[in-house]
Length: 421
Ligand code: ADP
Ligand code: MG
Image (cartoon, rainbow, N blue to C red; front, side):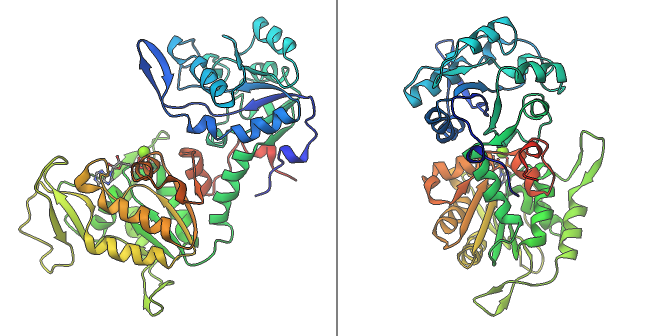
């Protein structure tokens, strides 16, 4: 996918609406809201620096959480403006409106190389309704939109999509990188291409996994996702966590066990060879797991799922909480043979020391592999940070839902205005 970027347009001295995603984790310290994790703010700095080099007048558009079209004091953008200012060591003027007379005055007063942050766009009901009047008003403050908010691209909102009806929109460096890296997975990945999927929220990932399974050589499953595949294959997963059936917002019922069965059936063909001669099935699920009756339990046991009687005498209360040692070894071996790796979702309840090993082994193997390595998912990111491996991958996507929709092959409305014809 090719996008128009900041490099394809003359920005010198222009009034630029800089669309970013500064919806970052916050915490309250002494009654004041402070930024807890500024990753998403830092990711926009290369583009911001470029805009300042071009002497642009920068007007930042951002949202925070879900105030549902009303002003919510705690969701103001002041902490983000403060953090950004600290990071770039420059003043960032923040006002308490996103449209209206105060906004207009502040925009008019803005000089070249100066930065203004407008208030949370979601304080206005027109934002999520993609109201053209609201979009037009926002658009009137700038001459061009620079979009660095890939993680919002799946939302057809006024400041993401509606606004582009009135002004040209180009991609910033961060958005461009997300699109390039994620595209490299679906368009011509270098084979062998190994997808690793785990975690709990199958409903979010299922479409991406089904789509990636078409291009991948092997899909390794772990975490709560593995329990679904195990059940689909007739294993008794006891009291394991599982999202088996959901009803989505369009009232469609999705049965993930049936989906897993289907996926196993249509992907029976073997593509990748282990050690050059052992054919691997396309979808591989754990053949041993770590199990316990409670997440905090000291009594952890390895359950071998290949045993003949399917462990008939195991307690009904057991939960499968991580992949087992033999599975870890196999997954590691496969990952080390890959040329492209995409990983989303922890292999186990990594928050607990007793169940972090599977995720750690995948993180280490992926870091070591001589491959293009791309990771996604908030909890996956938290896990690699915990293991201090964050810097060892080619790309760690900061977009949850948007990245998964993109990988599912959906057309993201927020990207359409930037697509080169
Ligand atoms: P991500 O945010 O990376 O996309 P998810 O949100 O889908 O990942 O899932 C992360 C959560 O899944 C973690 O909190 C982890 O504890 C949980 N998890 C992983 N494996 C299991 C398991 N076997 N049983 C229950 N929970 C699990
Ligand atoms: Mg998560």
